[in-house]
Length: 162
Image (cartoon, rainbow, N blue to C red; front, side, top):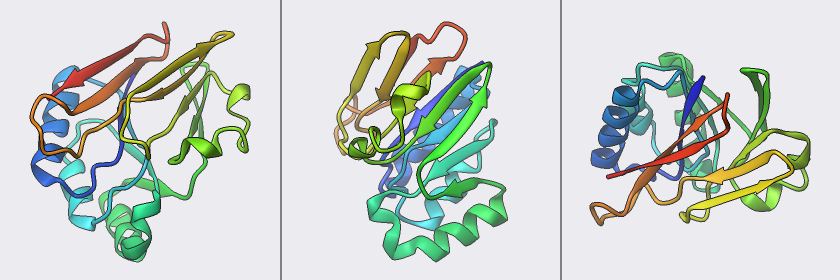
């Protein structure tokens, strides 16, 4: 099972459209957004994903929280306060927005912990566990944005640059 990982889209609709293309082409089974969507119209673009979308609210989502929640419900997108926890492909996953929340939510008890917030790539492996943030995807500089893919069978990560 392969999952796409997206963070901090900040309503950059051209980038969000490209993210949808990349993840659909990659054939991921599910997509996780680690927060800072910022506006409901971003969810409308993400609804074009071929895979189900699961997302958490980020710190910049507070001003549009009710609109985001309504759009997510209408579009069939799971959007919740962090942490989100999943059991997929016999792996335990944790999703937060801010990496400072990882310790509070027992990231060490999970096989994979995903976060955003920093806009910086982060990959850490320890005792068979992975902490991952694909980094910047809302920036203005072409070629410096990335989304991630995690293979839950092998726990290998990949970045798709755009």
